[in-house]
Length: 118
Image (tube, rainbow, N blue to C red):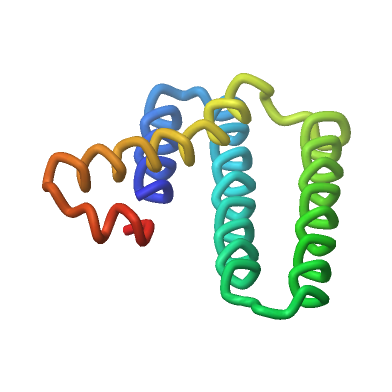
């Protein structure tokens, strides 16, 4: 859902000849999608692990992931200098996709799918 929203918004901005904004949106969206994908996998592994040392290791990986996202944000906004408004919009696409999917599942009455994350 997030990639579909991201593609539609990016193409819409490109048709309006707003290339810098579209680039910021695409980069922010891709970083947001990758971050959420990694977070979901790490949390699933953390919940599934029964051994405390595995949980500690996974928590450490999550801290490293957060640090990597921070470095990526700095690189993208300071060194590459993508459009900050577009970037923020791109990162927000993931949140919008989560809200849309949650509302869709809630309106459908699918509590089991909602509790499993889709």
